[in-house]
Image (cartoon, rainbow, N blue to C red; front, side, top):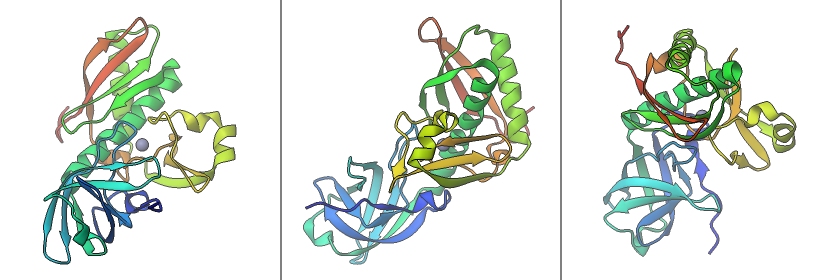
Amino acid sequence: MTLPPTVRLYLQDDECCDAEATVVAAAADALALDRTCFYPGGGGQPSDAGEARLEDGTVLAIASARADAQGVVWHECRPAPHAAMVGQRVALYADAVRRRTLSRHHTALHVLNTIALRDYGALITGAQIGLDYSRIDFRLEGFSSALVAVLEASANAVLAAGHPLSARYVAEEEFRERGDLARTLEARPPVVDGRVRVVEIAGFDAQACGGTHVRSTAEVGRIAIFRTENKGRINKRLYVRLEPAGAA
Ligand SMILES: [Zn+2]
């Protein structure tokens, strides 16, 4: 059976963590739904986790979600799925605190990658977003602790300025013609129905991205680049954490 791609509600609203859906398929460890608020991971951002309640009263713990090559989002759950779950209505609850933390980290990495490219010509070679810290890898010449301090200060100035974020869609051809949008956290841009999702930080940056973000850079707060590593001659890894509110 071929399933249509799952409707992804977080693409319309990055803060959407609750939804109603219908179970469309059951695999050994995971359920597919017609629509979902769960982010299935990708672009260095881990998937959401949370809970679901079937109409028969069964409460499912959802440890993670993943998307297959056809764009179907599978929700790994316990107790294990079975055929009688298919066709049932289900109430979904993604962990909103987890989502928000990941969105703040993710937004911080947009700001860092934009400044790194603009000021140092540094392209991303990898990123991993986490709850406690994130890391981002750049191809960066002339690396120094002074450069890291300037990068951190520049990023914090942009975050404090409170630039609004929004998402829009551009045709795939426009995306390919405009090289500036392709500087992305994802190696493969998210293409849906021939359109690419572009996340814009007003007055600062626009880049293709299928992840979740906060609504204003001010919601990230301050960041600290607390560790760096050499991952090759010009490949540098930066570790980034969110600073508590009120930190200098
Ligand atoms: Zn993003």
